[in-house]
Image (tube, rainbow, N blue to C red; front, side, top):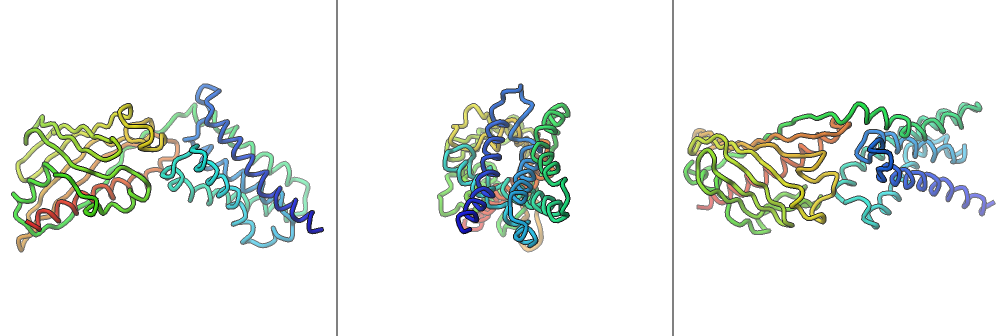
Length: 321
């Protein structure tokens, strides 16, 4: 009896795990001319729904009667998939951290739906689970016919600085080397994104070339398109993914790649009362996925963390002097 329980538990975990590994290979192999892609709604949302449904379908009825089991047991093969793909370098840490909450939520949805069918004591459970498991393969070609949905978004941040505007502005246009202890970008550092090193500007005015240098070989080429001395500076931002080392960022979140790119940035300096100036920094970025509704939340968080980190460096230096 105990041996049968062990076999059942292994089947509940290993079969869904093998399913998601197989589908990851299938969607990443690009063997059908781009009809099946990892960066698609079909993979990041529908595949975990199928994994969750299959996990519960293979489980014993007594366990499925518990709502907590139906919702949380599908997380086990998902987390195992997470560890395996990280260990073998199939996916990067940053990509997984961003997609894992969606994977877990969708697997719980699949487990909940499969549990409802299982507890009905009817013969349609196998048909339902089979359809759910096959759904990503059916939807993916239709999704690619529709194409990725481009969208532009804005990340806005600001900081109040008690210093003269001329002292603030010189740290805006050019940022000297940032020691690691001054780097407060905890979120991007946690994701493994490159940290800012310095920013150089050849001259202050329209047409000026600004180079923002990050570690791990990441460089943003920036061109000033609008300039008012000690008031505002707008610049385009370009990151050439071909010049970014492959070890710097996951291919699915690389800046300047197929799915995520930063377009421009703007500094605005606003004098307030009491010798305080408010420094605004906002940027526009674009996403091209079929799940922008989810990806834009993470991209905005990343951009705001980068911007707020730069702003606090500027405040530290302006107020310190």
